[in-house]
Length: 107
Image 1: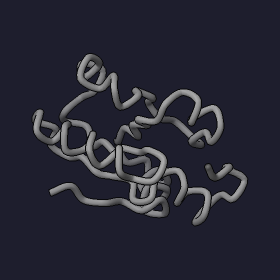
Image 2: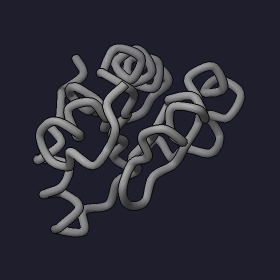
Image 3: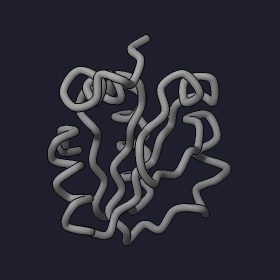
């Protein structure tokens, strides 16, 4: 089962410098409209199968999209491929805008 991580929990993990990859699976136009602050890796959802080698299955991975549905699908995909620690960012970038940083546009 894929666990959810809230935006605040993600920011707490970042503040503790926990090793992780924040994987943004949105399309390029979405990132241009509402960018994720801080370090992250962008691989659009449709490219995940062909770019799987860019990810380390042993590194905790938090998957992010607009509202949480696509990221949950990708998290399940990664889990089925042996990723040991995969999480879904609950509410996606939309929750980030609402809960943490209203300067990030909602769409």
